Length: 419
Image (cartoon, one colour):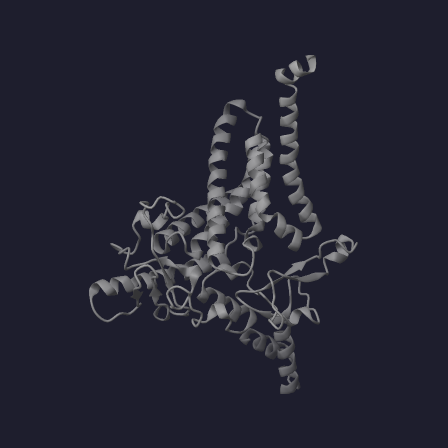
């Protein structure tokens, strides 16, 4: 708002009346609040309100089903229901992009800066109660290991608590991390933690013992980590060097910085916090981009190929593990949107890499991943992307058919023919 006011005052003539300036400001705010990607404003679609738990999504470019050519379809935006919408229920979308999956303070800051309002949807208020403990659901994206159940010796979590490797284990004797959920609030003092496991509440500024004050510091550590990670993600870039060697060096440096931020976020907030998943996906994006170029070099040096493939398989396994964790995290937020709304591109990238490896096992694994987003693609993606998804799945089907044919030409079949 203030930036628009300065812009108008600096460019308006001295004889412009205040009413004209106010009208210009109003038009700029209408554009800022209602424009879609590419600067497009629609008579009806731009009137759809935001929610941090939307029931609809806007797909750019249409689905190609109406016979529009690609140039015209780029000017089309389609509103699609993401879930069952009851009669009389308001249709809502998200204005946040990927930050829909971030914590309350980051969502509010993003909306305030870019859309000039504070969100008051059901997800952003503390009145929503969980069914089991009758406590405010709070900010599920920002949950951290409970400081009461898992005391810290300093600023950082113990390693077994930090990584929570047994989170998906069915073993009743496996170590389980208890997570506390902060209330929705903009400051650390407003974000008291509630743990459903121990039924305890942690306050940022408690009265009483040193132990409680140490527990309260975990909220402040989390709050600071969120701010740092958001600044890193919002300002991430490699500069404008045209030299390939310099660009590669810049990318390597950026990756190292992201790794450091990931280590900081994990040791401070634990593996279920939104900052950890966002940083993992940032690193995953870089990894997926490098996989293709790595596969293109295979065959140039047979002696180095074995080592290269071993490293590649390790990196792919790490990407798959991180993506699985992100799906689990997205599902745990209990949003109306399919997790593929956030993770579609990463899933397609991983599936493409696996199919590109060429062996039957990898292609089967790639088909398993693409199946996760197949229904989503049919409903929400453009026709070109639907073809990509189908091609990846067909690659596995062709490989399986070829394998079956080879088995059919074996000795057993030949003996059957002779008989």
